[in-house]
Amino acid sequence: MSNVVISGYYGSRNAGDEAMLAAMVEVLSDFNPKVNITVISADPENTRQRHGVKAVGWLDLPGIFAVLRRADLLISGGGSLLQNVTSRRSLYYYLLIIWLAQLAGTPVMLYAQGIGPINGRFARWAMGYIGNRVKMITVRDRGSLGELEALGITRPPVRPTADPVHAIHQVDREAGRNILRQQGAAVGQRPLVCISVREWCGMRRYKEVAAQAADCIVEELGAQVVFLPMQYPEDVKTAEQVAAMAKNDMVILPEEYNTNELLSIVGNMDLLISIRLHALIFAGVMGVPMIGLSYDPKVDRFLESVGEQSAGSLEDISLEALMEKIRLKWQNREDFSRQNEQLFDNLRQLAMQNAELAYEIMGRDSRR
Image (tube, rainbow, N blue to C red; front, side, top):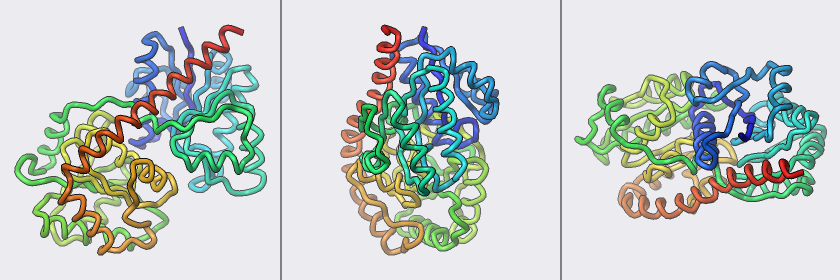
């Protein structure tokens, strides 16, 4: 039996990170149904119940070190863990976990990471020092390759793959239809356009643009707008702020949903507009045309990987630019869906390589 420990931003009610974990558990279990997975989590009980794995608290350093000593591999990822733009402290925490694994003699894999930006001389030195001592690095976008090179991380093998969520299976759309109907969405009666927003640096202008665009979608396209929360409850509050600025009634999904429910909801949409990266990836998995608004390089990097560009950044987005994208996607949404299907099939194969490489590391280590 393989013993794997996974370190990441889990147990914090962020749907994108929970989707990454669900995808990793799914694909690792597909390759080896007997794999024993322990997750380092901010809410171990929730992680156990949601994902069917073992879990240890993220501040329980003695407990973490104990499971690392018994592990065949530490997976650090996925996501943008190794950066210090959204939080200065989190970078050092994830590097600490990697260092504890190295201290315990456990091989480490950086798994489908989005690397950087990392600012500050000491932070960059620490990342370079520890990063050069892991067994394998896979990155989810080519921009991260440049970050690794700039950090001087050259010793471990580095492979460009794809975000773990690309490996997740499509789900049936019925559960999503039921959720949408319960919240008053006109499923099957009107086209549905999903908008996923988030709070960012106290900005107001992008919310005003999103509200104006939502009104245009209702009035010009005859569609119903549905706001989808990816971080609960913060995204619900932001959606309520945007909806309050609009003239037309909007549907706001008010609850926390698991990964399968979110995928099923997105699968019922005719178009998805999102600031959140993993809402965009959910759209790709479920074959739904997407439009991204950028707040972070990871969004631009993802969109570039599927031949897209953002409609603009949150700082400079305009109603005209956003509506131009919306009209183009709306008029050609069937073509975009077919195009996305092929692109995301390729990304799925790349995402599955992450798990293949993880088992290769464990196999090599066990033969020594």
